Image 1 (spheres, protein in one colour):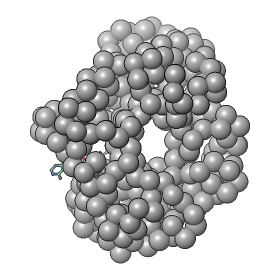
Image 2: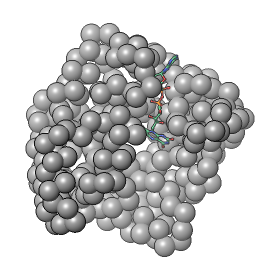
Image 3: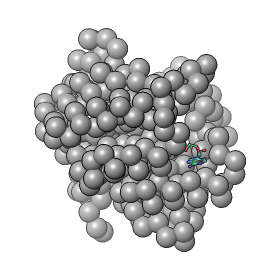
Image 4: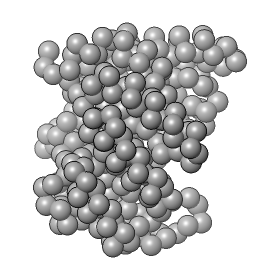
Length: 282
Ligand code: FAD
């Protein structure tokens, strides 16, 4: 089996205690030698400084290349340009380029770019080939897309604008991933499309989040999690087993790697990692 790529995603925290916990998590995960870490960005610039500082610190302190997420929907071109230059000057080479979701009522804020394909184009105009650009993919369709075909075409636009690779929204059904990859391959897309993996740790949060981002939580998983109630050990055990099986199916079926949405916790992702012996596959 060819070498596969694994990565871990974090979010920047608001408190000093949260930041310390994040650093400890990242240092632990760095020991597994992932290809990169990434750190999310609050659309509209709400985490601009925190994302920047977290990325630079993780990159330096853990030795794992760390990619900032950057969303365009609420930032002016000048704000985006400044951030890109700061990252470039600090040796950051990978970036996750997104449209983002502004909090309701914020309009476009300062935003001049409307969609992620315009951001990818802007990054290429401003910085040439300096950055390896990741974009988002939606095997179950982006929740605001008019229809699946439209969404596929919009994904292709991001690739044509210069994206090097894609990370998917999470899902709990490997078939939708294989179908999406097959469809975009037929449209001429040949970049790697890495499944985004959400470990299962908490039913109510997961259900709320999945509804919001358009990820389908299958009925059999919902029912099982409902039945566990507050029994977090059983939820964790069931989640690890279920997600590990899906990851195995994905990797066996040709997925080029996995990107873990860690929510700043190491244990749930590592339980899957160890189950699948991922250290031996990279
Ligand atoms: P786009 O690719 O621009 O697509 C958004 C919608 O517009 C889709 O419905 C698409 O079909 C449509 N569309 C796209 N291009 C066009 C066009 N040219 N004309 C007309 N319609 C178009 N959000 C954050 O705020 N911060 C983060 O750090 C963050 N990280 C993420 C990481 C990953 C791996 C993923 C999968 C998502 C992440 N998100 C993040 C969420 C993301 O910002 C939202 O899903 C957002 O709604 C869409 O972003 P996008 O980059 O996919 O947008």
